[in-house]
Amino acid sequence: MPRRNYSSTAQRTTLSSGITNVATTIPVTATTGFPGSYPYTIIVDPDTVNEEIMTVTAGAGLNLTATRGVGGTTGVSHSSGAVVQHGVYAADFDEANALVNLANAKGDIIGATAADTWDRLAVGTDGQVLVADSSQSTGLKWGSASSWTTMLVDDFVFTTLLTHMTSVVSGAGAAFTTGGGGTIASLSCGTTTTGSVTLRPANAQYVYAGYSTQAMETGVNVGVVSDGTDSFQVVAGWLKSDSLSLMTHGSFFLYDTQGTVTGSAASANWQCCTVNASTRTYTTTAVAVPTVGYSKLRVEQVNATDVRFYIDGTLVATHTTNIPINVDLNPALTIKKSAGTTNRTANTDYLRVERVL
Picture 1 (cartoon, rainbow, N blue to C red):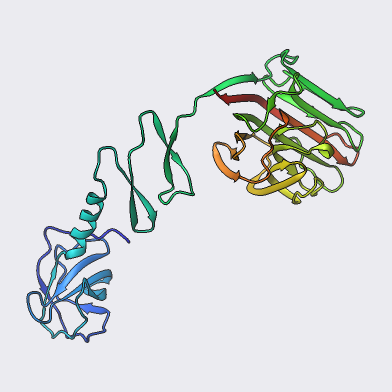
Picture 2 (tube, helix red, strand yellow; picture 1 turned 45 degrees about the vertical axis):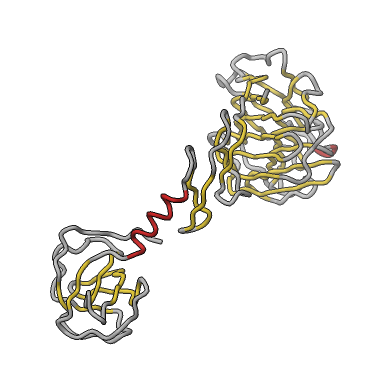
């Protein structure tokens, strides 16, 4: 419901000509002091048996456009010279009272359940924080405060990887380089049709999925877009294997313009994927993979319940099916060639891993 407008200086006026009980154009002799924005309320023939409340929704000069018979009144005919005044009616007070009366305890929060519909969210317990949750009537709930702790980070300042990181390179001309662009690492898949590079922790069994909450975050772009001649895939997230063809478990972002990876769409946009025991769930986002600048990709797995995908800080997908559990996963970034012999590259400016302890 749009906000109604009010004026403390509106002067009484009159109808300049009579109106029928269904007319929506209300001609008046003046609008001195009436609100300058719509909607607002007028009362015609106040304090008489013909009293009618109307909502003015627009105006052109001295002709007002109104919704008739508001607030329990009925549309009736009114004669020329009938009194017209700006005013209020029961809804103005009922709506405010309804909101005030919803909150009846210390800490209560009022939230919208739909347009113009409200409900009470009772205060949570000490230490809880407000969490967005679309399954709740108000879209909000109280939950435990997350304490993210950084477990691993590399921003590629040096020309060699830090000791906790490694690169797995396959194919002629494939290479991993770091530090040459200041704080950039490049994964180049070389000149064979199956070349690949994976950046991951040196420990190939980094986390046992399904029993903790962890996040992998990295900034990614591609030097040249993938096409039908020289096609490649980029994967960033939690991976079971360095090989995409052996990817039986994982939760990750995928770039795959040709639909090469099992179940994926042929899209220039980032796709979100969860896979458990080779069964997959995909969501194609509205965000294109950049060749200039970086997409900040973040994949959060919350125990065995859901995986949340963020791009540049915005939640783009939440998966609750095919969540990988009871399996070792690595935070990793991979590029793999699938057609053509021209070298193609994925770039990253950092890789970070966090866990809730």
